[in-house]
Image (cartoon, rainbow, N blue to C red; front, top):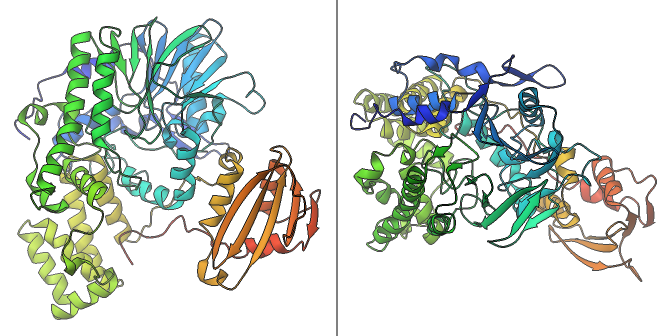
Length: 607
């Protein structure tokens, strides 16, 4: 840590460059008056001296991410930063303004747009661009494109956007959102001993998520679109930081948007909240392509997080370092895989080249070398490391009970765990004390001892998400279970789903054992799509197929003829009033009664 160039203040200069104004009030509230975001919550981070409860490198990153307000990137391009985990970018056109990435919540998006308009005039929104399919880049979209304006405002997104947005935020949305509470530390108190950021930004807002479906799809690299007189040249980058993502150049502004493919941190190959494992090989490839494709065409590069980089030489160095970072992690992990090392072993051995180690933008504030190389291992080799002892291990509670018995009971296990903690072997102390908690969840000594270890691990971590996971885990052990504030299954999200995606979202909720002996079929003739979906439940599995037009001779238990809006209402209320039905009306209720209700607040560090 002492070798890091703390005297290099270029990031601070760039983070402050172009500042226009801060909001008059730092609090953003929902309709019920609850605070969903507070720009000023990190005012304590203006202290130059890092406290003993924080890693100095992470403290520096937190200071940079704590800045907020309206900033000018270049002529005609502005960013609102510090209003959410991500940035909102606004590009002025001939009649109004094109918005890029409308944050997580409609409330923060509305506040960001209002700040822009306060200082740049009440310009209408004339376009919306999603850089990629993660919720912090589309959740506030309904504040930008209100109901009834969809026909007037083009919404641009990379190919596959809606499919992947749904897969990540609906199918496994409950579990991912739950883990995100720990990853971003949104429920932790803000302060030197608590939440000081997440590396990629401060934390996540807790308002209303929405999703306005795209109307213009970017399907190939080199595609150009003009929105409100603003020319945009696109580079598709699927499979990088998101399954559906794109970079793009504003040729007339000489400004390049790198989405989330190049930020001022080592990013995640597999995010701690859970996701499909990303491909650092293709990530590096697309960064190489961007270097060649946009060489000499941009004087500033900006992204969906952090602060811009100005100057062609600086841009080249920044993108080259990011490219080499992901390429090195990928290739060196595979080299060690082929020498017989497992993921945890590689995580202990692999270090970055000295030049990257000393580059602030390559530091592991959000992703980390440790969990990224394990993710590369998982991508190629899966969960099994080849050791048959790991093929059929006991689940955590049963394993923990055996550890406790072998150590002479839970008290003895706790005592041994404290010995390791006192010797500063916090990693093994956490292992033993975790077994103690799982062996006897009500053992207060075990819970407090593990919480104390998590405090120390978290406050020493350079990685923001590691810190938040440790400290939120400690909070859970002390009796306060962090709550999920974001609802990824709200009506706004459901309205954006296709009929196929709606059925898929039902299928993943079927309680298989309860449905083993139930067989039913339904035809949904959705008139505004002029298609019929045949749903079949058998052997606990809900499957479907669709065909054009209305059913000709149906053999279904129930046939519904309705619009997609009526279908959403029927699924939410089980009410078939104003719906044309044929067959046994209670078939829909029978199916819905077999669906499990996800638990958004399940514990993570206790059984």
